[in-house]
Length: 317
Image 1 (cartoon, one colour):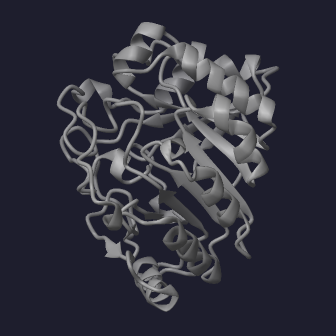
Image 2 (image 1 turned 180 degrees about the vertical axis):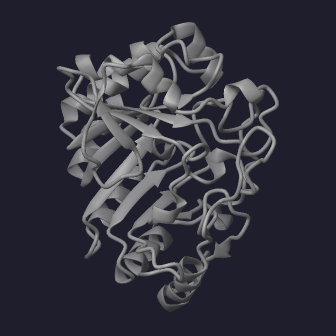
């Protein structure tokens, strides 16, 4: 479907849960989330109906996110049913990777083509700090399981945080020399109140190019990342700059939260509820939400905060 600004919306990101087995400092509060009643959240059938509606409107790429989607007991069933929807060409999943040793093979067999894993540091102590409760060895086991399962593409996402991991850019980039993965650096986004992240934490992705002068540009792959490659690497380096070089004019995505709210813009306050609606009701709301997708998300920096109104774990990125 084309929005009022002429953008073709072909990509739906669905948050399956706001729960997570980590507590990353830029994503969710230390105490976790307020537990909601089961009936307040999208169930499996509603998620599949939403995907069917989306496909009827021309959306062909689905990304399942959270929170942490692998904490859902029915995650494999959801993936299988979503992948089977007519018109859906690609099902992707974003995960912190810790539960992949038990789930990777099943997910691949269920139709998930691509995985994005989250890793902000190679230092075990810093990993424990930024995730509050995570262990680096668990991530490594998840990465190995993902590679063994044979996904078409595995990407690793690092949130670039000045004073925390901008001294590890070279090390993180070198993962593309060791593994057949893409390494992507994403600018820190000022969502909700991150009091521990001061102005110096919001560094541009151009910092990566300063640290890696040897990289060579490569053609885009249809995503929002600007792509580069280390000589001899097995994968690309991607730079995603929602703050310093926003891509709102080319944005082709819409988001669905775990409690059934369509968000035309990650950083926008506007939400459209589809929870409890039938196919026709959902379709009408999808059409309204897509048509009203805003031109851009407005200024974002340490002073100008996101208007999202939710923590990242409640939106799905």
